[in-house]
Image 1 (cartoon, one colour):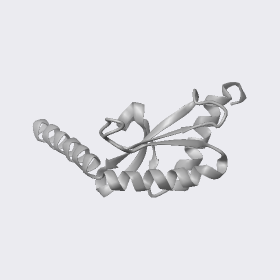
Image 2 (cartoon, helix red, strand yellow):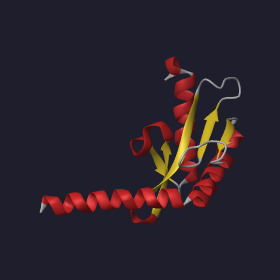
Image 3 (cartoon, rainbow, N blue to C red):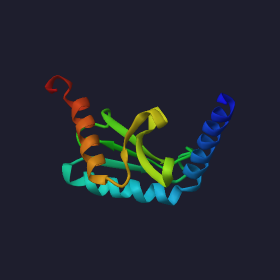
Image 4 (cartoon, rainbow, N blue to C red):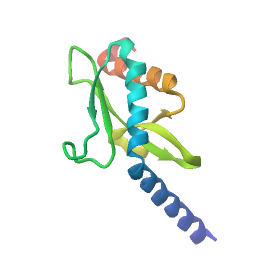
Length: 124
């Protein structure tokens, strides 16, 4: 019985990876929405969307402070179970879950907190 469950888990992972790679336009739309939500808070962005220029499998959004490019976060959008999409910290992949894409304001608030903690570690 455990073998069937293992097979189902592997099949779901493959399906999610396939949806993520095929959903480039969806990922770009969600990343653009996130950048619009974060812009009033003063963060800067570098959109790493073009595969010919940045050979990565998914579009990425690098968010950083105006004063420094040393402190930032790279966000990706990955397909998740149930036909949903979610924001993830790119370097951690699926383990870097931040928020569902349907809640762009919640994701913006969470990313804002993460970046402020990284900028001012003694203030938290």
